[in-house]
Length: 268
Image (cartoon, rainbow, N blue to C red; front, side, top):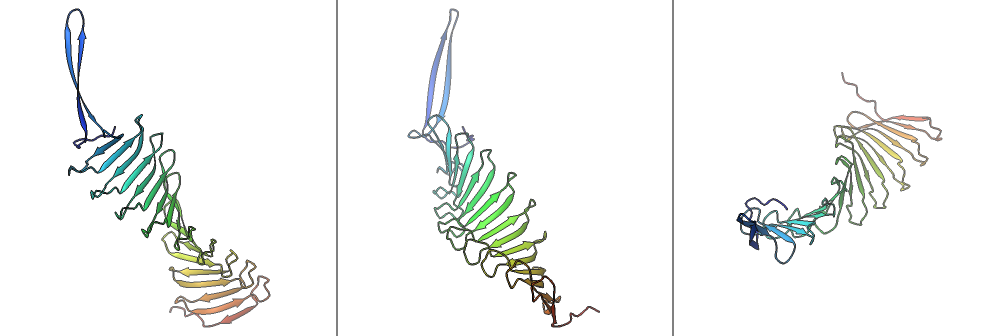
């Protein structure tokens, strides 16, 4: 039974039991008073946690005393905005939260058999569709986030995190084909260091961009014949201006043409 220090409990029954114990020498009258709090119509214990005279927590049990569900009215407006669902082992298996208090649950947490949080699903647009899923490892560290931007039921953005909680890679499906066509890689400080693109939709990158400070290009490589190897290279100066182009015209892996656009200016 949950602790309800100072809480008001409805439908209380005061039961007096008189026990007479008789032996040859004496008679002892023992008066035992029990306070039993329960919902008379169902196995639900109701609690007023903020003492405003209105119930804001409902604890549901099976007839044999096993917890099924706890419901909360966290903002005390008379509407349930959080639920915790339990299994037969007395562990919470799912939590549901109405974060914007519109009467619809939009945040769902799923737990493993040993009670650890393993997945979070969110309706971030509050339109009744799950569009974001977060996956955690055995130590409850964020591993991956999947986002469904066009609400077709399939993720089109995948974000990956290391053990320190830092984002290390993002994959995107820009044409909603179900397959990633853009890959972004990040430094420990969060800066975008390089990106790869699949421009012809074959599921393999054919353009690679190397960046400085997330947005200034340093080098771009192209695979123009889609054999998996770059055959065109573009080099940029510190300001991001194109300064040199190199080509492998016969696709043997060697540069056989070079064009100087502008010599980079060296600092004095």
